[in-house]
Image (cartoon, rainbow, N blue to C red; front, side, top):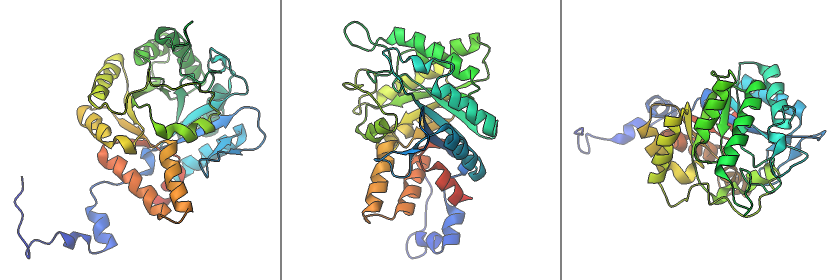
Length: 328
């Protein structure tokens, strides 16, 4: 522990006197390359469809998604995480494993447009594709069948990798998902495709706007497989399992309500750590700003800086391109 001079010789405010001084001594800095843009692409639309609960966010057409990817590259954004919204759903989420399904088509589109200039990531989960809205297949009693779901995830991993994705993000919180996905990728010759594990994904009240964005058909809730918000130590168990199964990167989701968990994870590992600033976090800031209650631009940077300060190396945020442009 350092020993500091006492007042009046010791004045911490000397290091806050001007913008240049504050910039020089800042302990944490945001950088465009650390930002990842989540993006939705919807099958069968001719124009982008605004997401009403997320002002400024849209369900993209294939053409506007390509344009968004180029804009992200030009701003210096590090990656893009793709979510597909299919025209047709079924109990197995068949569109998620169809090589010509909307998500696989979108991966190919973005790769063709920007190549390796942007890290192309894909959500590896069934919830966007199932008519019941759950992240896996259901058993006869209507419960999510963990092991049967893993078989579907393995197939999803293969078709997404075949489409050219750089990173898959298994987000369903099924036990063993990272190991099964790693084995499937390796067996298919995709050893270079990375896994961003959704290690600590909580059953949160802040996912509401996202469910509009993906036209979710969710019936019930996901509390039997997503983590209980009351638990923190449990995240470290999930972390150990994901690392043992071959995760290249790990994630905490949501971000702001779980900064303590993010910090504990970041202090425990030597792999890159991501945090997802989710739809409800985005919507709260936008709504408060629209009512004149907060300074929108300052609040965006403050929330992102808090996530970086807690230990995130990468941040998924719907403001990625906007903030990257401001940081350059």
